[in-house]
Image (cartoon, rainbow, N blue to C red; front, side, top):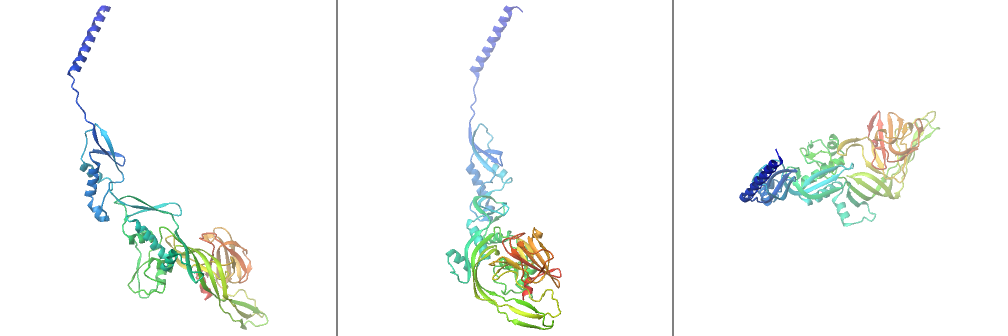
Length: 483
């Protein structure tokens, strides 16, 4: 192909293309596309459709969910938490009705109502959450739990700022929650376990659950103490769980139903107070030996008489249990006179005497826990001794002569620093949670001898002495020795 022919064809092709373009311009009739102003609906982040009116969708939800209104006695029902509606401008014509969107979301997510989320942090900083409808119910529930551990009279005096002015009784200086409790308004899914009434919330706050399952029908031979023991509860725990029963000596009727579920408050109730009391100081019996008298000869050298002290303790209680108690003032009104009995010891060597026992601390004192069943962290726990605190001095004394069979620090099964003494006749005494021990294994000790110092070691909730007594290997109530 020569150059002239190539040029001619190129010119002809250009004319054809230009002609086609002119034709298209002259004959093209553009179609208009409308921009739609609507709303994009998302559920849990996923697009589920376009609608014209979000207000119409909200009205449908509120109108159609009458059963939720009736169940919770509320006036309005709201969209699910995971529903989001965004205003958009789009060329998309695929707009659906609000009824279609409603039908789709009602089976995918729960509708909501206005309420409150309550969060409580435990000692391990873990959060427990629940929902309520009425904010005032929480305040009432907390007050009712407080009144489970203090009397209404004491509580009202605390609120009114009344002082006892060193009169006998309990003066509360502070009441507070031991756990962080927060409340915020929110939209609550209707399928959540929502607490709707004050009584149920009271129960939940005190027991940690709303479905109490353990109830007991009183028999004619029952006492409050026997019912508590059968169900692995302390008497105080039983009375807290059954506020209508006032005191351990209250009358109970055969066939009466009582609650024996263990209490486990969602938040601990801390009460700080000054307690002033007149405390009887019981005399002890001291034994003296006379080698000039025969073994069958004995006499009372000095009669004993009880003393009386007026003492004030600064106390911290958690859920009704004494954690700390310090003696801040003590006045001896009448001194103790100990009884002295003389035993003949001619040609006789005595090793111990398990007839009369010394008290392990100075007096006055406070007993912060008893022997027997108690509720600890919501679970039954058998306390194998008595706890003593609130003494002016922390010295610990042997309650009877004997041989030290253990004296060591460490965990020791929760006892912490502990001393054990064998007194013969099957008796062993245990002194636990000490800060230090002043005897060693193998030592022979005398009744009343200083052996250690009160402390807060092991599984302990404050400075105190745990005194345990074993008889032939079985734990017994230490108070049985002092009757």
